[in-house]
Amino acid sequence: MSVTRTALPETLLLDLDGTLVDSAPDLAAAVDAMLAELGRAPAGVEKTRLWVGNGARKLVERALADAFDPATPGDKGFADHAESLFYRAYHACNGHHSQLYTGAMPFLEAGRARESRLAIVTNKPAEFTEPLLERLGIARYFGATVSGDSLLGDNGTVIRKPDPAHLQLALDRLGAPTDSAWMIGDSGSDILGARNLGIPSVAVTYGYSQGTPVADYGPDWIVNDLTELL
Ligand SMILES: O=C(O)COP(=O)(O)O
Image (cartoon, rainbow, N blue to C red; front, side, top):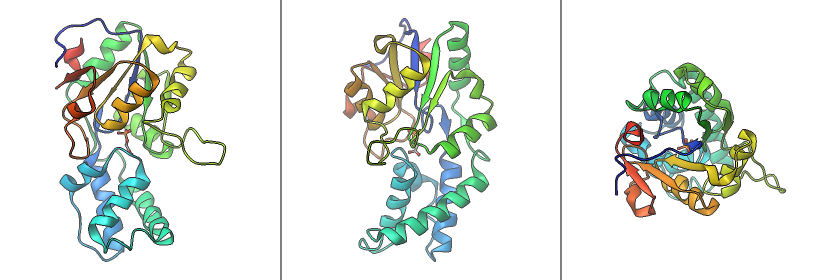
């Protein structure tokens, strides 16, 4: 299924990594710096691409599971230590080699021209989201930004995609009704999050989908470039 021409809705919830931005080169650099400090060989960008999309902790755990005996990443203290190494390394390189995908800027410009409400809904921690948006020069397009640690449950656990409350928080911050919105993303957490909230979803084919074709999640539409939606 592919959209050739359609009326865009008033509100667009946009995933960040793998949808607007190819951030894998910087994420891989940080993963490799973490692995080097732990005495392991680099994983490289192609493996890292397969691990992105469920937050920084999951990325670190997937890298550890690949590099170590399976029991090692199960040790919480070890994973905490590795995560802190990753955070330090990613702070040093976030945005240095990340690039907007070809269709991203024309799409955001068109959204602004149409006076659409745009929000970022990402599983990336907020301390990395805001600087990345600034460095790429796209922060000004969004009326709201919701990151992977923006919403906490009663017991302090993070609530993020595919939990519909994560998407709903973006709508609340925009002041937008649920039935005005679509979610656009590259992975199962985006498509399932949209379904869980009861809104349509658009999947891009070029992002990070943990090795599962994004079509398998049953998005409402699939595009190879965001400008196909215009
Ligand atoms: O998992 C991440 O850190 C990035 O997630 P995103 O694809 O939701 O932007």
